Length: 515
Image (cartoon, rainbow, N blue to C red):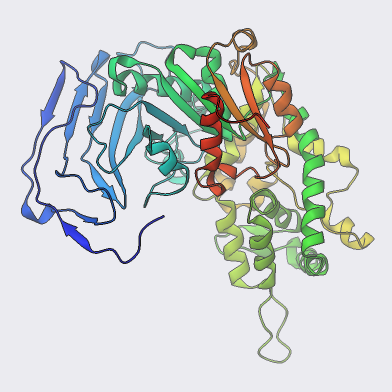
């Protein structure tokens, strides 16, 4: 927690070069810092006696580059940036193959810049989302920085790692060309990038600890499968994937629909007044011209689109409250007598911001592919939902007088018609759904013979990573120590401060119970 009201201390600037991973090929740049570049720290922070600044470029095999930036500060933390030029496709000659950039941010507690600390790589949830941007110490970051040098990596295609955005993907001349590019943006190559970075960041290219949240945990299990030599220990939070051969998406969605129904029941039990409000909104949308209303970005909100709010609303610790507060403001007031009833701009704008498809389209495009090994998904969520006999049909629910059920972490083909940001990628999404030749993501034999210490937080009420499927996979990872809890939801790592991370680290040190 940031200390408020502390006086500011002016530190005299003193420059020196820190080389975290010595290299005979490194070219050091030590610029003169003008007096205007003086940094301020809070007195409550552990102030360092010098201001560390560094810019370093390392040329590796085949001309690959690692550029390290200057140290900078946020309250109680010191950070610096690393940019790596890596192969798009690691199966090709590294000297001649196409390259992309991968970004990672190094984080330490103030005063620990020069200490010899073990490294912890954090793998973000997703797919298709960039890593967190620390603005101050707190939460699990502070806990990790007690004993680690934390590496926050933007997974390829996100953040500052050759981001695949609406505009950047528009450079491709055909859907086929973009699909051929996107096939390199799954967990297998995220692990390849991590190994590329480890060998250049960690002293003597030693192993590091990996913390995987949600999809980041899926990537960590891929890491265990194909590059265990790079791992000292692995920590998973809501991130144990199904590892069966073929496409496991059907099994995932069958299991997840059960939990989604339960989460809907909990929501309406908490806010029973919302049953009628959602009915009114569904009826209004269905009776509007075209079966919906325009969204601010140019998309179209329909009853089935409304149900997507469950993606964030049903599965996180404060999701119920946030969803309820959105519906509190769903209608414009009728100020002029006789004015028609309208969904408020506030609600429509909040709806689009909540879904993030305009800023992170990679999530929608690649989501079902994370379950595919040598088989296609064929719009699995869409197919499996039809097995529920209209249970998720919003208009039918209104007619029958039962609650409208929100959906969960699912991508449907019609979204590429109704979501403005996704429309340009409709053909791409179809080709990805039909793609069969996805390479393996897991090696069950390797996991059965795992030697890397693994601790995993398994959340009993997890809506995104099914509890039963997670335990099935855990039974195939030799030596894994699962911590089963209903104290946290899927967002437990974020919500629990440092408690979840501390518990997992304690388990591997033999200081915490499994249950």
